[in-house]
Image (tube, rainbow, N blue to C red; front, side, top):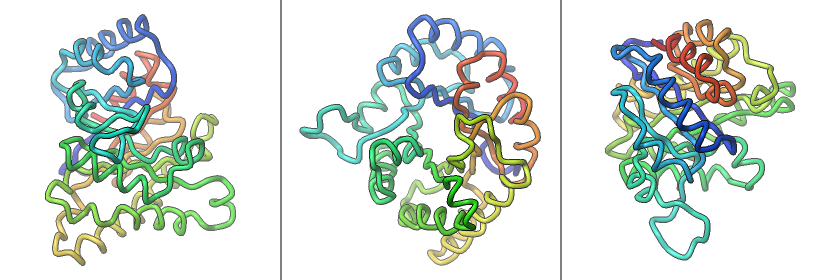
Length: 258
């Protein structure tokens, strides 16, 4: 990880959790984190718990994130959550384009870009997810898939707050499967993403931007593989699933990022 880029570990609870878990886990994680450290720790629980979570946070390195955000500012969009609503609930971050949203809710890369734009415009930091399936990888299409997903959000790099964008590479074949990309596989993809960023940023006259944006790795990240993954030069943190629901595991991952 570069010393000049933010280090972030975000815990995506998905559709797991309860008020009891919230009240036990969050204080335990905060107690286990040293006050000093470079890693920003983000809790992303289901939306119904966001306000209560914000009230529990007392650690200077901890923040709240939404698991999704609407592309719309407001309106008759039943079930949607606007970026302003997430901000008012205490959120600083919002995940967009997670593979489960793309797969189960049919979200296109264009919709992901619209959501990321809405988040950034409102003051949230979007965590933009990209990733390929096992079939994509085995057929040699990994970069073709990822570059298409990235191209959809390329215009965001021209935004005034572009330096606050966070990218997250999550190979779909490693999410919830117990399979994890090797540190070398993760670094290879992250380096390609970084090179893409450099090309795009240079083309719009912002060459420094490519070195500023953190790229997180996600996909069965656990305490026993986090250190090796985050020792790679272009891996700047982690987007964590199941392990973020276990205090000891999550603390260990955060310490690896430090």
